[in-house]
Image (cartoon, rainbow, N blue to C red):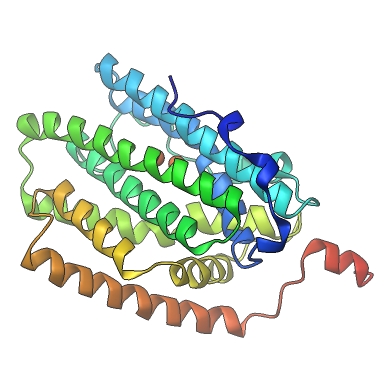
Length: 288
Ligand SMILES: [Fe+2]
Ligand SMILES: [Fe+2]
């Protein structure tokens, strides 16, 4: 049983006057990545092929991720009635491929795979908390809160399974930390950038990774507040086996906050150098 259904969202409360145009491209990109959860479930079932309990949990997890994509996609179509969620996702699925056939985790161990999953859920739980706090639009607020609650539960799911494998595989804290930080930096790879491109650039336009990731990150990081980073830092430390609260956590929170702001400024400079991108509707109006 899912914890909520699309029909539970109070769609009739949608208020176009409260839509922040800066949030819409981010929601479109997030809808793509979330909707792709079933592909990850195939990969996880391959890697954990002799663990049916985890396989079932991964399949259930994927249905929740797909629902996140459906809810975000539906909201984005309310905010931008000209946007076609299905067509954008079809482009994304076509162009972004995961190593689905792999029988071994790309992280080198099952513990490592589950730590990487914990990092993704840390990122998504803090991201939807930040978006939900930043938006004044009531439906998006509700969706973000529902999704964030799922993402915190997903963290717990992967964390519990990780502890089970850690007892067997006995991977040291430093290795676990390296895997965690490695997965965090991967957020700048193609998964999000390509989703931003498919969700926002006109069909058929060239994919420009530096431009797409800069546009995405500069805007996304701006919605974070220190409390979101503080909670996320505690989750990262917990996942790698370090104390989630106390001096180390305070220090790491300050470090992450500074690193995030530095990245936001750097990406904002890159994004500002790009020619202004017209929305498809505006291009049509301009006779392009
Ligand atoms: Fe999700
Ligand atoms: Fe999740």
